[in-house]
Each structure stands twice: as structure tokens, then as C-alpha cells.
Length: 344
View (cartoon, rainbow, N blue to C red):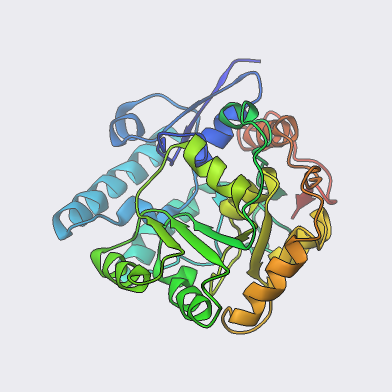
């Protein structure tokens, strides 16, 4: 069969922990993927547009950039219609993290009308009942090249780690409050990631002042630096106020870390998949000091010499299922029959 060219609405992250880089690691033979650029989207050649976070098409860092994105997205819709280019969408979230304006919804509805198939990362993601939908779990990072050469490192006792993009909805305020109620002389906390804005930088910096066992690294770090921080921590803390899918959760588990996360339908599924010893869950509206203590105590009993065992997250499985979806929207193959591999 002729090679398929898929333009992903994702950019390279500069490392291998980004979702695009993970897709590169799990691309089937016969499929060529490209990271997103407006030039390629408007005048380049591709068979399928694969959308991930559609709101990013129309959101800019300034009013001027937002306006330009609205214009570019409108042109993209004309281009998709003209060439009858099918759209596939991976539904990462139930709704945009920061909400959507009325104008955004109007523009993006046009993209939605061009969408021929959806991909969900878990079986509880809601999708329109009339849209062909395939279940393709978030791939694991166990085979990502930059992590394969990492030497085993001892865990730092009573150490907590938060990593990832630092945004309001991810519950950093709750984590700071909970940590402040602990005996900070015996428990350390490291926060690694790029804050969303200057206000978050100021709040985190103020929190760390006078706390000897709090370390901040408020920037994007190299894969090797992040992986060492994950493997050395006792518990990776994801204090999110809402969680539907989380690449940070899968990355931490792939590197053999115990994770503390909110109890949601999706985290319960991951806990069932890999085992309750690896995924500790808090059930309140926000994380508490007691949740941190319980997670540290539980992590101390886990045999870190072994790793969590995943289901259906191997790159070869992810690659084959994406290929089935791509062929289906081009009319060259039907999607699998309804079952655990496909939702309709």
C-alpha cells in the first residue's frame, strides 16, 4: 500500500517525553508523520490531519497572535474542504483545561465537522455516539531510547516530586498547603517544570523560601535530568484537581515510580491495570498532608526492582491501531469489530 502521510497537530517538545515524540516511537511501517507547522498545514502535502488539542489552533499568547490563528484556522478549514482531507482526533480531555470562548467553539465546530474518526485513550471518554471511535491507550515510555541507558539509582527516602507543566488546575496550591502541614525536616519536595505565568513563579518562590528541603527547578529540563528526578523520588505527586488522561502518570510508572494521583474513573482504571501498590489515590476534593504520609508509607513497601506491567500500551500495539484508524478514514480498511479494542 502507498505510504500514508499524517500531519499531527503537535510540535516537537525538544525531548522524548512529549506526545509527538512518543508517537514517533510508535509509528507503523507505511506511515510517515510530520509535526505541525502552519506552512505545512496550509500548503503542504498530507493525507490525514490528526488533531489532539483543537483549542490550540485558535489560542495565541497575545491578542494579535490569537487573531492570526483565527484567520489561519479559517483558511485551514477551506483547505481541508477543498482537498477532502479527513481529520482524526485524539480526545485527550473531556473539555479544554481553561475553558473555551463562544468564538472558539464556532470556529472549531467546522473542524469537528471534518472529523471522520476519534481516538480515545481510555474507555470512559465521552464521544458523539455517531462517530467511529477507537480505543488506543496512551503508550508507555519503557522503550524510549533516552531512558534505556539510565542506570538504576537508589530512592531518596521520604522524597516527593511534582513534575510537568505548572498550571492552576494541577493543584500546586493544594500541594503546597499539604506539604506545609508536614514535618518538613523529614520529608523533601522537589518541583520541576515550567510555570504557566509569572504569578505562579512568585507563589512557588515565596513558598520555598525558608524551607530547606524544598527544591525548585522552574523550567523545562532535559529527559535525562527529569528521568533521574523521577527514579530517585519516593513518590511522584500529581495533585491535580481534575484528571482525565495524564502523560505524566504513564511516564512516572514507566520509570518505576510510585504515583499519588486523584481518584477518578481513569486513574482507577490505571490502578487496576498496574496494581494498587504503584498508583496511590486520594479521594477528597484536594490533596492533604495525610494523603502524602500514607503514600510515602505505602511506597516504602514496594519492590522497586520490578516495574509496573502495562496492558496494550506497547509501541507496536499503538502503531497498529493507529494504522487501522488511518486506513478506515481513507476507506481502505474497516475498523475492528466492537470490543475492548474499539468503541462505537
